[in-house]
Length: 362
Length: 97
Image (cartoon, rainbow over all chains, first blue to last red; front, side, top):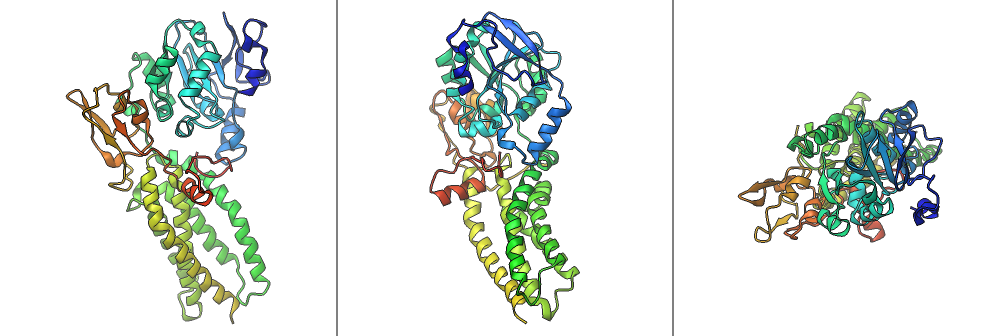
């Protein structure tokens, strides 16, 4: 928002050559500028380049994810005029790219809200993709002077933050909620702003879940470095040192919680995420302990210890995936956590104690 | 395959008296919780509600109430630890959105 405030154009008229929406001339996705009575508007390409694909890959792995954004304001696709539709979206670059690549052959305007680089749905939940920001952005870009109609298309998932009737009351623009997914936009526009039930429903396919898992895995790996540090210190005076087998047992539990459980989510019996993670974690741990021949009297402490701590770890990580899921409710998560968290803590503490006894005593 | 979360927890409430049957709730709900019946909205499947709050915010008659919040365990833990309202704020880099 600050960038625009400093732009002289906000006073109107002083520099007709300037773009309404400031952009970096080095941005290769801007293919030119379109003239409007209110000033220039950057034209966005509908083709993704290698740089865009690489950027998407990076944020999926959690690299620079909180700072992957474009300037809020108005953009053009194709060669729109005052009768062209206006699509509203968020200033997360991944969101913007997902939208523009579906708009080939269309002439339309895109109104980008300042959601601090967060996608539409999450930003709507926080309120940054909200009534206030939408009303502000409409007036700031002087949208009513760029288009002659009074209709804006919002992504349906913006609805938790936007009060459609309130926007109409304050700006005169009526709000049409479009489809959930950008890939349905063309069909939606071509069918006279009509979304089918299918377009209105959120899905959570195996692929949807898979692309979310790297971020979870990276976050867990970062925390794990501390665990490895502690184990290294313990190894300095341990009778039984932690080695490769222990590392694999631990890493397996992490992958089970952050990747395997999300991937197999609807196939795992039960409803609570922690339960699903615990179940798979137990299967993994039991199998690995058996494989190593730890189910013998000399290693029983270790076997039971790992069976207490590792499935709990998987359960905890799986429970964290509720935040990435598209269908868990606040009340549900609270209920799940109140039941699961005490069990996870107790089981982990007991397990850690047993493993340490095995490690430190002859 | 349909995803199912915990049963009987959603706080969604619809007042049939206030409802004017505009159908906005059915339109914005991402999980098809609402249906329209004789010019009134009705809750078809409450257990599919994820409490995002889209219906309540877009109801022009305030006929819908729901304790909207983030269904995110990490956010809830942060809320408990910091004593603040759980919010979907993963600025740390890891987590939900």
